Image (cartoon, rainbow, N blue to C red; front, side):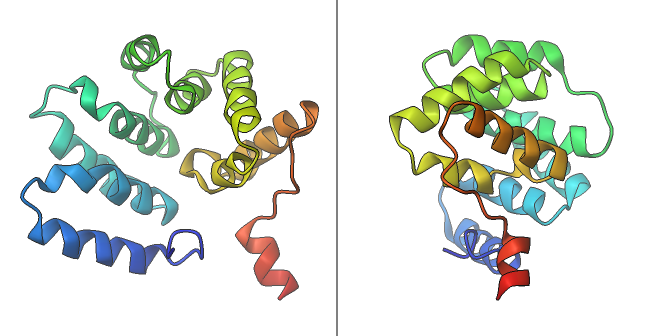
Length: 168
């Protein structure tokens, strides 16, 4: 709830409190890294993701966390690990959401657009969900998403948090 209202600090605090009580603290790592990405705390997001991924040898059960690590690296103007992203995409061909992100980070916009179309065609409310993903936060990426959805007749009228605040 806090994520969708734009209160990422509160979301992060709750995630960390839950992690402190968890038997398997890495379970909520992806949500914590996503909150850090939404807060534009990219170095912290990268450090936290690496602390989970490196001891786990970037295991396949952490593919979403790998995506978020690469988003954090990309936002810090570092090159993404293309080999790792290709591996993530290859082993997740059944998962349109993971593949859309991997392809987008690999700058394979054609395959990313195909996956976005599938995601939203399955459930039109996913257009709103995609709008909140950290990967589409920068204005150029938000514009790409909107353009991709519009080109496929799937845009339900994405409104950014900034637009909501201005109109309120």
